[in-house]
Length: 99
Image (tube, rainbow, N blue to C red; front, side):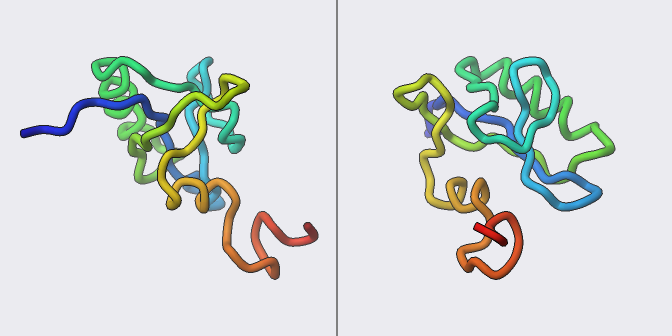
């Protein structure tokens, strides 16, 4: 039996620099996970995923399960997505450099 649809965000990687990106409510790509659009309709999520797969500037788009946080912004459900949002787990390079 297929798993029931759950709210999600559309995420991918920027083709040119590898950064993690998220689809925002305006249909643009953002690097801020909290600015992502929470997709709560399965048909819309699948349409947006199909459209993202045809874009040239991003690679490997997929739907990542998320829930609304207390402030209404999407929050990752799985650890993998939380790690992708913050970058490598060491502090010597990437998004965490200089932190």
